[in-house]
Amino acid sequence: MPVGDHIYTDAALAKLQFSWRTCLILRELEQEIEALASGRAHRAYLQDLLKKKERVGYCFNQIRLERQRILGSSGRIVSDELLPEADVLRVDGMNRVLAELLVVMSQLDDKIGPAIQKDGADFNERWGHLSRAGVNDRSALQKQVEKYADLYTSKVSNLGHYSPFVYFRSPTQSMTHDRALVDDLVQEMQQGE
Image 1 (tube, one colour):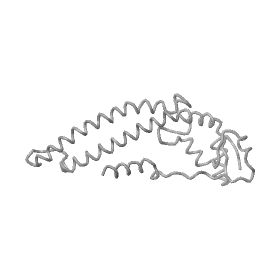
Image 2 (tube, helix red, strand yellow):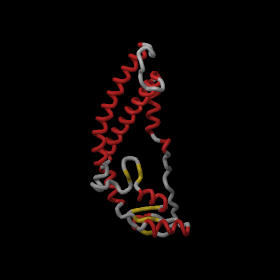
Image 3 (cartoon, one colour):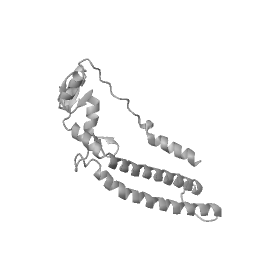
Image 4 (cartoon, one colour):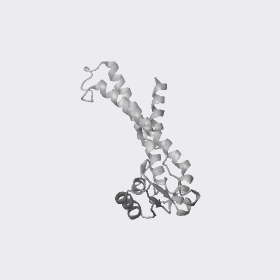
């Protein structure tokens, strides 16, 4: 297995041209792990804010959809004679709730923006984490590492703890539809019924 510290020449070429298993050395990995550990509380706070916004957004969209069903394809009341008075009152109530939800989402955005800016500052104040891009995405480097390196570590000496006959397996990968958030939303919807 070739071991190197350059993603293109040491990992990608060996993988693509020779179909070799590869090991990539990322010297910054230890700093990244320490930064991830020290930023865990902030990350939990940020994810909590994002979950709240997602829930508020879900409610907003459900009310908006119901409002559109009442009003029809035009999306507005042409005259009070076209809608029963009860529906006009419902739409007015929905409009007030939608306005309140927009205020809540705006307040959440005011907290989320600075929290996103601070996320990753433990590793690098300007660029954030090495392996992440934004809140939920992998960085371009991390995507390349996952694509071309079968194994990666911060230094070769980390491999000294293993027998030369060991077979490294990657952990089970979660799929987008496996997200706990989906399960949480389904449970909340079922409890609300």
